[in-house]
Length: 44
Image (cartoon, rainbow, N blue to C red):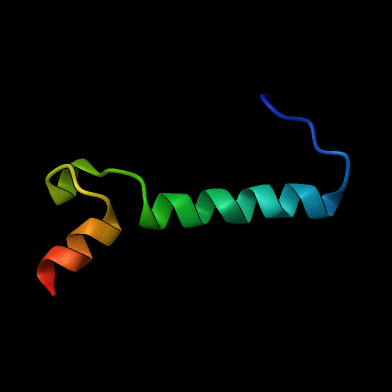
């Protein structure tokens, strides 16, 4: 594994941060290379 977490809270925060990144900032091929936030802004 890449990271070692000392506490459950630190692990949970890292997971929550990654999930937010995955659903909001990560560029996705199916959205024509845009992040979900960029795609939503373009559609509005």
